Image (cartoon, rainbow, N blue to C red; front, side, top):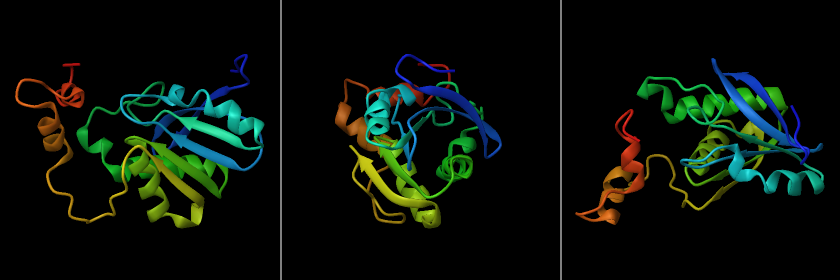
Length: 166
């Protein structure tokens, strides 16, 4: 399926699930990974810009989002599963790929490049500082979010911790 902007949509089988991707252009592939709670659509302006610059821009819906599969088990959302999804998608796209992640997509990009450097020519993370695996990080992310929200409020991510609440 195509749109007026030249963005094509398709489903790719990867790591035992379906991944929806939106893509535009031809040339070296640049894989764009969205943050929380977003979808491929958050890259809608970058897709044609990258395509016009001579790249094949691909924005995926991460598992659980948009038109990609939505497994029901919490364990199906571990980082290793998300990296497996990216590796399967890169097999479809053809390596090497430049990978860019925004927000919670940044750790997926970094871990994909760290675990499979043979598949990536470059990696970039936006909006979230890099934390190497095993580095002391202090409180869990959800605990830090609670601290930011304060006693009387709730950080928006907390709404999504209990299935069906949001």
